[in-house]
Amino acid sequence: MERMYVYYGFLALWGGTAGTDAVRMGTEQGWGVPIAVQGAAGALLVAVSGWKLATESPSDFEVGPAGFWAVVIGVSVIVIVHLL
Image (cartoon, rainbow, N blue to C red; front, side):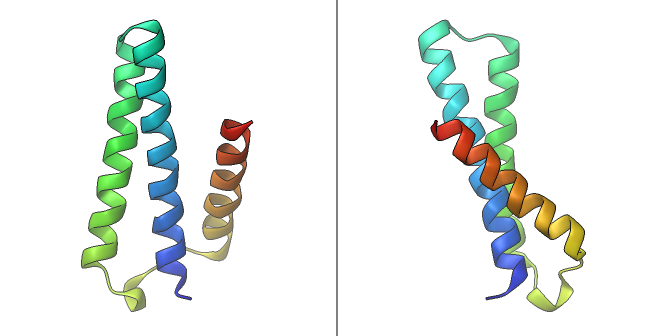
């Protein structure tokens, strides 16, 4: 599998997690600036990841191994902790 698809897929997953968490908090606690910013950031992360997947070629992907694994492991931990 191409690393580019994994990388941007995990970034989109992170954005989706942040966005859904912001919606949950906004409906439970009321909307404030921090919650709105988190929701907007999550939506933008999903949108930009999708745009990069649609427009970038896998041969142009230039993220090093350390950055790639930092995103994959970091997002995995965020999602696991979020589900607990």
